[in-house]
Image 1 (cartoon, rainbow, N blue to C red):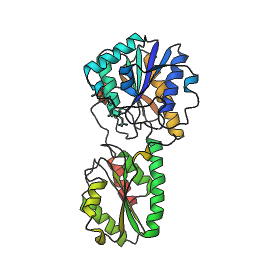
Image 2: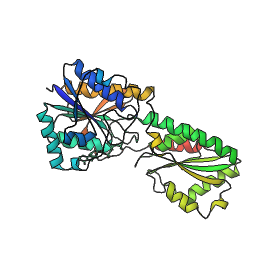
Image 3: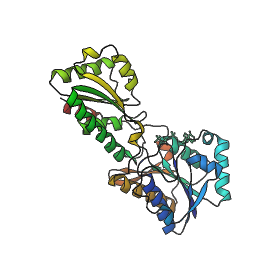
Image 4: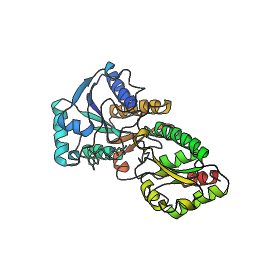
Length: 324
Ligand code: ATP
């Protein structure tokens, strides 16, 4: 049974991570455990950046975006020596359990620790929503709303000037964010990694939107699509006069990550953080705490890593029908 746990955030930051840190801390303290905040993800685990946490340490953070612990990417942690160093550090500080709040790569790291016999559970947190084991991951809802706000604004200026906009959103190899932003933003199309759209098909969508008398055309492009924003803009360089609309490209980039978490992510972070601790209290280790339906779901990390959740084909079709 664990009695002193570490909590860290790793990989890309996601709105709602602070709610999860707070929930891990206060749930563990409620069980009579000690809690240590680990700064800078796995890098801090290896260099011993440990801070004893009280309930007050995590006060006033539920509404803040980003992560108070800081996040990092570490190549060294991918090596066995790096992970041994981390385990040695934790042993020296009496830390006998760990909660990892992060996405696919971070949960792969958590699984590696689990395989080395260290008690660890994960919290499904990434704006990409590519993690198997959770219908929706922490940060997605807020990131989606930020993307939508930008799309709404672009639509206004696009309509005023009769323009088409290619808007690139994040998501790594997963098209969820792009597809949902297209559906909720009333875009004319989504270009996503899971379903190939050629540049000529994009051109056709733009031309047909113009011919139907639309005042604008918004195409949401996932950063991981084969024909992402730069590829498409390059393709259209000499073809601008053939589209009807004047063409512009906008990359939303890190703006999507920076926002204050909305109600959904504050609640999700709280539930998932508490859930990861509860699993440990029940002697369950090596699982990812996620949400399926509206219930907490615990999936062995072994079944989550190395996989990417796909997007729904029916939602993709729905977005196309709505774009008419
Ligand atoms: P996001 O998808 O939201 O950006 P992520 O958690 O997927 O977040 P990554 O950069 O993929 O972000 O991974 C974060 C860190 O997890 C890496 O820098 C590394 O320290 C650790 N990690 C990734 N893959 C492995 C692995 N195979 N073994 C051990 N650790 C890993």
